[in-house]
Image (cartoon, rainbow, N blue to C red):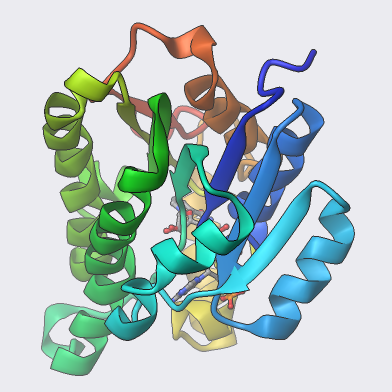
Length: 250
Ligand SMILES: NC(=O)c1ccc[n+]([C@@H]2O[C@H](COP(=O)([O-])OP(=O)(O)OC[C@H]3O[C@@H](n4cnc5c(N)ncnc54)[C@H](OP(=O)(O)O)[C@@H]3O)[C@@H](O)[C@H]2O)c1
C-alpha cells in the first residue's frame, strides 16, 4: 500500500537504528526520504542501503551553526516537504553528582534545542496538512537511576508536541510524539551509553526483566507507528503521544 505516495519526509538521525528503519518503512510506503546525521560516511552507507528514493545530508543537531543551515540544505534537495521525523538523539546515563555541564549541554543541545530549531528551519518548507513526529522516550514518564537529563530532554519534546500542535492548527500540520520503550539499536551499546561493558550488561538485564513481553522492541516496530502518525490514518490525532514499549510502563 502506497499511503505515503507523493510525500517527502525528513528524518533527523536517519542513518541508524529507529531513524533508518523508519526511512525504510516510509520509502516502502511510497515516500521520498531525506535523512540527516552527523557523519558523512554513516549517511552515505545508509543512503546506499535505502536506494534511489533517499538522499542524505550532514547536519549535526547539536551544532546551532549547522542547524541554522538545515532549511537551505533541504531546499537544495526538495522545495517542499510533508513529514518531519525528529529522531536524532543521544542518551548517556549518570547520577546527578556525576553530570557535568558539558554532558548536560550535549544531551539537551541534541535532544531538545537541536530538535526545536530544526523544526524552526523545516516548518516553513512543510506543506499545509503535513505531519511532524517527535521521537521521545518512556523515560519521560519514569524515574530511572542516572536518566535525569535524558528523561528531561524527552519530556520537553512531549510538551513541545502539544504546544506546536496548537500553533500549527491554521496550517493543518499535526504534531505528535512517539515514546519508545527499550529498542534494540546501536544506542544500546556501552560506547553510546557512556558505561562499561559490565555496567551495560547489568543495565540491559535489569531493563529486560521489566518488559512484560520479555524482549526489547525492534526498530521496525517503532517505524510502523511513525508511519501511522505520518499518514492520514492518524488524521484526527494531534498533540498526542503513542507509547510503544512492550508494556513496560503499564
Ligand atoms: N533505542 C531505544 O531504546 C530508545 C528508546 C526510546 C527512545 N529512543 C530514541 O530514539 C531515537 C533514535 O535512537 P536509536 O535507538 O535509533 O539509536 P541510534 O541507532 O544511536 O540512532 C540515533 C541516531 O541519531 C543520530 N545522532 C546522534 N547525535 C546526533 C547529532 N548531534 N546530530 C545528528 N544526528 C545525531 C545518530 O547518528 P550516529 O550514527 O552518528 O550516532 C543516529 O543516526 C533517539 O532520539 C533516542 O533517544 C531510543
